[in-house]
Length: 610
Image (tube, rainbow, N blue to C red; front, top):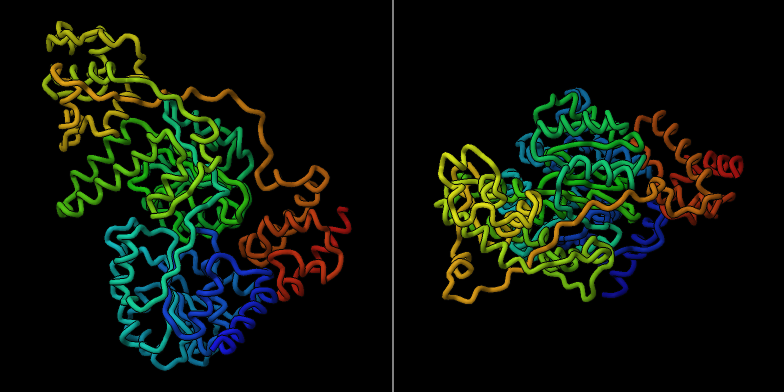
């Protein structure tokens, strides 16, 4: 039995080196490939950039027939196919962006067995015409990418995914692999149930992305904070900035452009042409920033995104992890930076409360919101908490998040909390945060005087804290469950059951420890673009020359630069400086097809620049 399994694995290792240019499998790749080659189903959870695609691409090259890859991402199929063609792999996609004549030609080639891999969306796969075609072909395997889309608890739910269980009944002998980078235990169970993967081998890799630095900032002026973050750490780097609304996307992109960065907007309100053009520019040009709603990003495989910034609080940790995971797919140091404020906390709770979902669903969503808020207000290692959410234990603090690198100060906020809660109680839980803060700080305000609230015992008892500090206190009191907001959307503050022991004098209140507001750091010395930070100064010039050559070749072929070689491969070339074919083949990411296509031209550049 062992000998029978070894031969396909030897073949797989040969393909890994000769086609993809890598020496060793990572994570559980070898076991997953082995399972598929031998006709078994698999569910694979692997972090973004962990090498999920190779898990089905290599079996597709070994097994007889065509592998069908089901992806929800029509806009990205062409880039995925372009990348495979660069490796000498026969691949195609079928989607609505193609002309009818082209679609018919691809269907005929599919019937003739001309492809190793064929990409399509679930809607097309479920089409009767497509299923009849599939019935007539040899199918190597089905790869269901972004499998978390099957889950109603997830953040990218697609109802068509729930119909994909029919693959098991219609093609029982064809192995299936479902892949995702993000799924808590509830979502995993639903993927197995909905896709009929009860007999599948489950491979859960570490969710850790050690190259990503996580930082979450309390904000004063969030745009200024964003500018400082980009200017000090990522001048000239590619990045994604997420905003909650379309209006904020447009305004932030315009503002960044005025500040000297090329920033492109992306949201569902833009025309398909504009969205597609901006996405293509982001994928194919170096150093661009895309400013987007969450409509952007799933499946983006640009490896050199050096930062992901959130201008608002994501709905849950799955969304946060999925979105931050788009940074640093190549394993190079990258940043996940987030800024948020009191309004985000209130809006998140209102969004769930006001949805027309069933009560059970709302309860789950509230739990997920609480977990997200908990991650933000944490004073210990963020990575430990993030991994714990996905059921993984990190024994030691990571040393690569803001709380590890600059431990937050905490303070005994019991008296401040009592003042805040008492003021809300005395104004009969009818007002929002700013009004209550104005009372606490004794602001001369007509509305307060009209309501007689300048006569309250809580008027002007909070002058020891600034308005910004009070907003931080209220935000944390909501996050810690002492306060809630009304469900009508006015942001009116309400006391919770947890608040009463703090207010009742005959009870000993628990101590309330809160984070101190971080002051903005003083301007640091600007860093070089992250892509060249790892290089000694003498090699940086060569790296830039190789990048310029790569851009020229990519434009000639109308493909993203990274499908020719990613930055990581160029960095290794700049350090090793290969001058023979065998030396070039030793560079990670250089396989035989790429050697024959690009070996000479890159070696010429190396010898010329060196």
